[in-house]
Amino acid sequence: MFFRYIIAWLISFLLALFHLVSAGPEAPTPTSSTPPSATPSTTPNPTPDATPLPTPGATPSPTPSTPAPVTGTAVINGSFIQPYLVDSLTDQQLASNDAYLTRAGLTQQVLQWTADSRTKTTVFPSGIAGYAQSSGTDLLARTLYAADQAGLTEYVGLQLSEDWWTKSSDQTWLTGEAAFANQLADRIWEWYGAHASFGGWYLPFEVDNWNFTTTASWARLAGFYTTVAGHLHALTPGLPVIISPFFNPSGGLTSAQWTGMWTYILKNSPVDVIALQDGFGAGHVATAQLAEWFSATAAAISAAGVTTRLWCDIETYTLPANPLAIGTVVANMNQVSPYVSNFLSFSYDHYDSPEQVGDLYDKTYRDYRSTGSVEATPPSAPPSLVAGVVDASSARLIWTASTDNVGVAGYQVLRNGALVGTIYSTTTSFTDTSLPSGTSHSYTVAAFDAAGNVSANSRTVSVTTPAAQDSPVNYALGASYFSSLAASPTYPDSGSELTNGAYGTPAYWNPAWQGQATPNPYSFTVDLGATKTVNEVDSDWLQFRSAYVFLPSQLVVETSTDGDTFTTAGTITAPSVSAADQSVRYRLTGLSVNARYVRVTVTPASYAWSFTDELEVRGN
Image (tube, rainbow, N blue to C red):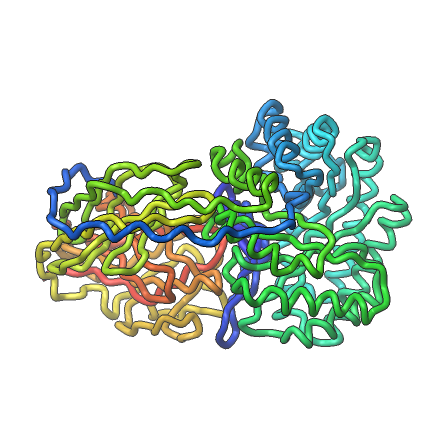
């Protein structure tokens, strides 16, 4: 639901966090749950030097009472691992990573994919005509060898393709993908089947309740599964074929219709395992909704009269690509454990292994596994919080570290009572950017641990940003502009949207917004028509996380007098905001630059959507 291949590195991580979906008409098409460490599909994720000045504040609130422990017997047995992570690790690091898995009691691993049929690449030297190796090493050989040594069972993923979300209704395309999957499997088994860890197959194409709503679409899926799974069963008798669908209750089929969908598919295709994504990390569901959908899937298996096993693909991340509290993971497993026989994770390799995120999440999980209870002692409140103004649009906070019986995993920063920043480290400072000038704000900070226990708040401190230079004239209003990347046809640019003065409401279906689905930088260049003295550059962006619409991680503003030679005027990092659906203004102020052309280069937060509705270039 990180639709899972979202953040290639982070941008591959979010590639989870690919599970993109939301409420409202024509949501951006869901991407798979592969966060970069998630799954990509393109259908809809500053440090100033000023020293803070102490600000008087209230005394900390009393330490909260110890919460009731989260208990349970459900345990994680496996983990997805994405090829890019394997490629980033040395052989020693990969062995260490697998050793961490086995120490935590995991016995299974899924290499999420081995090929991309859209880009014609593989992660091993396949020798398949028309395909090139995209990885620096033979990732399949390295993954299987490491699994051999660790005693893991490895399930090998076949191909993925971004085209899945737009072409899965095309029978010709689907037939071609089935034929390639079989060709790929033949090559993999021929060259790597002797590995003791080789335990089965995984089909990376993900199915959901939004894009597959008709009997005709179910029939196409059943045909695809029959062709591929039938071939795999003949090639490797006894080895299971696993799929990992996901659901988003905010729209699409209801849980009852979901039962009907899977009853039809399972009656007509030989799927061995449904590893149903829980969707919590991707923001699709609340814990209380999980039982309804897992019971609906179990009912489909029963109604179909098949031996398909139901597993859970439990998400251990939170958007955009951070570890999920172990207490929450366990609570989610408790909800679905009556319906499933096994738990895979998305992903212990990426979000819990000490090889990636330090040892706190791993230690907290292992303590739960050995005791049956998640520790419930909160950290101490952060002492000595101070705050100071950096400039007209930002403030900086500094505090003293909290303590915890296991270890502090990070800090939450609240502005005016709303969570605007979460730090997943022991860093004890925070810069709040893109504040309105001439406004006052109060701040508190709380510490949290890997279990999800949160401390009492720090004392409250306040800052007031100074008034900024007034720049009343928008030179860009009505100006022409050029985009290096065309907007999506689903969320198009009319040709004047960025400079027509019309702002969208905080809903992605509002026609004022245009949307791009890419992890790669792209730019807009505005022609002011004549050289002007530019004092400020502003742009408006949408956050709608449930539909995988994220704020850009940064904007770089450049100016030019001739349209050929550009000079950097400044960089704007993502403002600190709450997780609510909202439009957010990115502001670069304090300029005095002569320019006719202004270029804004956008770095997306992940392999998801970025939506903008207006670009302003202001002066006097």
